[in-house]
Length: 351
Ligand SMILES: NC(=O)c1ccc[n+]([C@@H]2O[C@H](COP(=O)([O-])OP(=O)(O)OC[C@H]3O[C@@H](n4cnc5c(N)ncnc54)[C@H](O)[C@@H]3O)[C@@H](O)[C@H]2O)c1
Image 1 (cartoon, protein in one colour):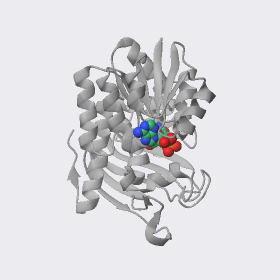
Image 2 (cartoon, protein in one colour):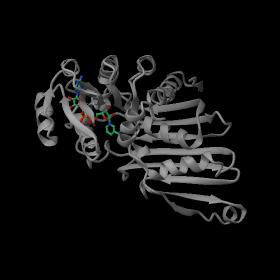
Image 3 (spheres, helix red, strand yellow):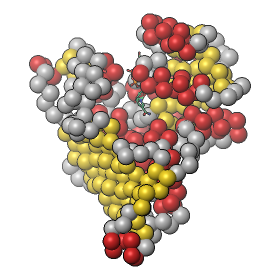
Image 4 (cartoon, rainbow, N blue to C red):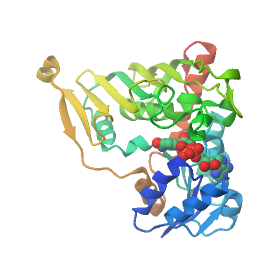
C-alpha cells in the first residue's frame, strides 16, 4: 500500500486525487493547504482522514510513503525538499521550480537521499505523444532537421476558464513576485518538454517574450503586479543538429488549450496535435507518401498516466524517466529563455 499525501488542494489537486483514487494499492491519507477551508473541503470530497494547513506538521506526523506537491509554483522547492528530507517519494507539479538553482537543488537532494521523484509533465499522459516520440527514436523520420512546437491558450482574451481579474488561480500566474515565470514557466515548460521528448535535447536558443499592457490601473490587482510574460517565441538549436521553433501564449484567441508538435526529418515527419486527439499521431514516410504529402493517422494503445508511472516507480524503487533530473533539464530551457530575452541574444543551455 502506498500512503499518499497531497500538498496544495486548489484546482489541479482534483486531477491528482481522481487519478490516484483509480489506482489499486494507493490510499490518500492526508492533505494540506494554507487555506483551511480548501484543505477541509478537499479532505471531505476525497474521503481523506487527515487534513492540515501546514505541510511541515503534516510531514512530521508521519504515516506517509509519498506526496504530490500541487501548490503554487513558488512553494514547489521548499515543500519538495522537506518531503525528500523525510525520505518520501515526491511527485511535483510543473514547473519543477521557479529558478534553475532551486531545480538543481531538488534534483541533487533527491539523488543524495535516493528517493523516487517525478515531475508532472501531464501531456505525457497522451499516448499519441509517447508513441510519436518512440517512433522518432526508432528512426521513423530519419535525421531530425526541424521541429515546430506550440502551446496556445487564450485566458487573457476570453473567460472560458474564468476571469483572470478575479480568479486567483489565474491572477498569481501573472505575477513574478508570486513565483510565476509567466506563460514560459506555466505552459512553456510543457511545450519544451514535449518538443524535446520528440525531437531531442536543445543545446542553444534565442527567445523573445512580451508582457502586454492589460489596461488595469497601476498594473496591479491587490498584491499581484501584472509583470509576468504573456507570450514567448524561441528559435532553438537541437543537440542532434536540427533547428526549430517553440512558442506559447495566453493570447491565442479562439484556442482553449492547443498543443501541437511537428518534427521533420530527411526520411519522414510526425505530428502530435492534442486538439485533434490524445490517442493518435500522424506520420508521413517513404518517397511516394512524402511526394504526395500523404499523411497517415496512427492510433495508439493506451499508455500509463503520470500517476501510474509514479506508483510503479515507487514499487520498483527507481524513478521514471520523467524525474527531477528531467525537470531540472527542462528548467535549463526556461532559464535560457529568460536569459536570452533579457540579453537579446542567443544563449547555450548546458545540462
Ligand atoms: N500538469 C498540469 O497540466 C497542470 C495543470 C494545472 C496546474 N498545474 C500546476 O499545479 C500547481 C497548482 O496549480 P493550480 O491551478 O491548482 O493553482 P491553485 O491556485 O488553484 O492551487 C494552488 C494551491 O496551493 C495552495 N498553497 C500555496 N502555498 C502553499 C503551501 N506552502 N502549502 C500548502 N498549500 C499551498 C494554495 O492555497 C492553493 O490552494 C501549479 O504548480 C501549476 O503550475 C499543472
